[in-house]
Length: 518
Image 1 (cartoon, rainbow, N blue to C red):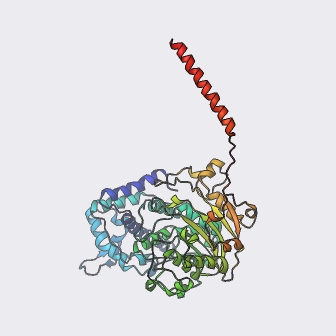
Image 2: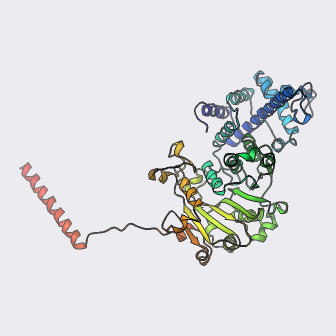
Image 3: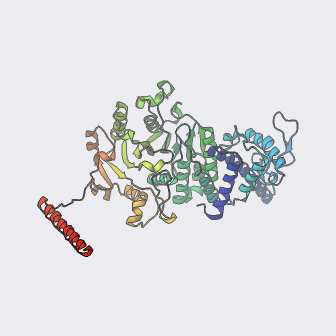
């Protein structure tokens, strides 16, 4: 958690960009990502040097990022510079004009040259410095250098705080999923050390980061056993997006949270064929963009075989079913229209989820949860791929409050200790402001005490047959009963008597007033 002085330092860096002429939050985030990556390369070099000195051996060539005694000369330039000049720890102390020359003409070309060196570096192939002046670059470098990011937790928290400042939706309907909603979905899915996890619309990789943090907390041995650690760093996480800026930001988010080599790659998930990835994943966590329709010609043929539609929200659910292996599970956010749309494609997709797969639950989210980006009503869809059915009951939860106000301001309503899905012991008043812990607790009891809940309560279970008889409508309001408190009214005669008595009191008061004035 970022508080106090650390928060003030980050805010100061952000404000420097705005006052320096860069007002697009995504551009600010992208430039900060480049600078953090450059800083991280210097830290990696320092670790390699310390290890080599301790072992009394030279640095292996594959780990020697800035080889001493050698020059880097960008393509098209006559003069080169020693690799050492490109290190953060050295150029940060140069005068502003010289630092700007080094970073613009040498460091950024160096990043582009290293694009094939790692999964993180590959997203730097199009890196471009857009910081306009030496003075702003110096402020940014000095500001980031002053931010203490010695450990993985702090690095991750700092970057998450920076991401929270992205307050504009992307051109393709992307927006940042609130961290507490991600936390709820990850806790519901409870990732395991042997899972293979995918987000086909990864954006900033918030879901993948959340899953990684869950594994670290609940399964610490996954990071100490060699085979499990290799899987965690190299095979567990895959994220796809077709926005290069988002890929850079998402990859950096994973790197700063300590995942060494995730598969974060460029892909148009709905347009490209997924034959190689079919049934490759055991867990999908996603909040895909649902901003319109695609042409049949521009849609992967494999998705149209599941359900023929042009709507992106339905196509993404088809994609999830295609990517999951049998036994794989998913927690994904969908617009409410998926739950009750009346088209043939809507009904068929819901029938597939209920009859051919195992639909585990629906969490109806409040309409303001994605404000100020979007006011669309959404829900969390929770299901398991079986290819053989298995839906007996579907668990529903009506989430009224997530800890924030539901207007465009999204002000926090509770203290930090009462916020999120993992807090315990909330009072009734606190629960009214934050339903997330209750939703998680009741999800875990969906095969137990939840079976006894009445449909008039906040959570309940509905039999498969009842859903089928309603055209597979999954809208919670279709099944929830609202109980109204009975109000007793006086009889008409009693009301007239009360009015007559009131009239007499008024007349008596008027007479008393006349007597006083006489």
